[in-house]
Image (cartoon, rainbow, N blue to C red; front, top):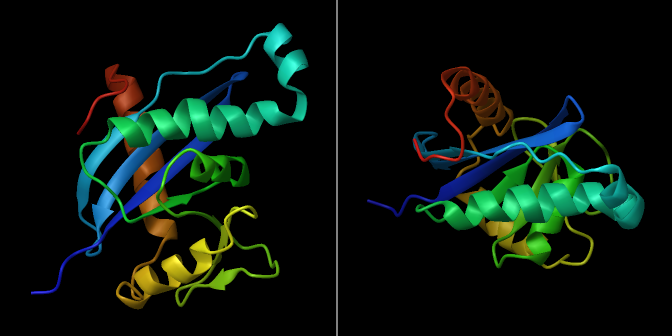
Length: 166
């Protein structure tokens, strides 16, 4: 039997002036292996002024993304995120990170089931690594795991669970 690849899905969004994230690792068959959610990150006015335009990528990539990925017990060979600022996670870890989008950009990787993957502009060599991973999982719909992550995040928050493995 061929080795199964693990894919990470990092979902980050803004809510009530703060930022929340969730991370799910699935195998190439789409089965969940691990799920984690972050605590809310709420920058104060001083941080907003000091960080300026770098604040959101810092929060998404380093404070939320890096913390979730480093705490995960199951490693991923590729991490896909729902938002462009989270691409800065790639500058902190040695795993390719791609943003799933509908945007058309030069260098975007077209997916068989719709959408495109965009890598961090400072790590263009990730395109080759990602294409290698995609060869073995071409039938996976990358939008669907984000629906599960978002819904599971909502349910976990209702139950008062934060930052725990599933």
